[in-house]
Length: 220
Image 1 (cartoon, rainbow, N blue to C red):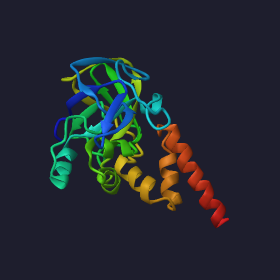
Image 2: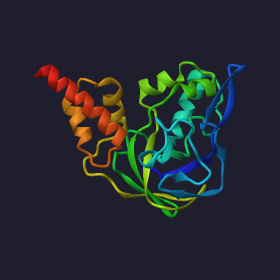
Image 3: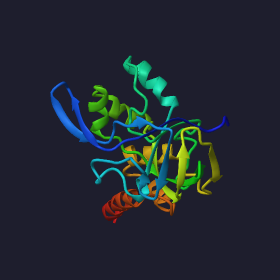
């Protein structure tokens, strides 16, 4: 495998953004490139989210997006995308959703992060890019990026190395999780496999457990 690396390192606090020329929204999606920042359990210092229901918190402290997908979106939508288009903190190379497993631990600079769930795209991405279909396409392809918790705090720099410390033995990839989360709502066995990964984000665990319970009642 080619070396994992940070392509873009970005943070930013929520701010009011204008979209569709006259509408406004408060969002943390518009981040700025930075040279270094301290990563705490709650995320990067100087970073923030607007809607805590769907973003942020210890299980979702760091947002990661594979750089390779930018080429596809730019070709498909015939539009150049700015860096950190999807509000990610780390745009990374050689860390695709199919190659990253829930529970994997990575050293990034001084910090250690652990993959917890796939990122669930929201309509803010459509509004920011002016592309009404891009959120749907991210879900269709599973090119969502993913979220991480912080196991060890520390400073991260834009040129920090990314090193896999420990690959989770169950090898449940983010791509597999996305497929089941978005399209496999009736696949109880698959959902149980995902829930069995102790490192899974609590929000995803609760959501999948509700679906499992529902279908087990139906099968009853």
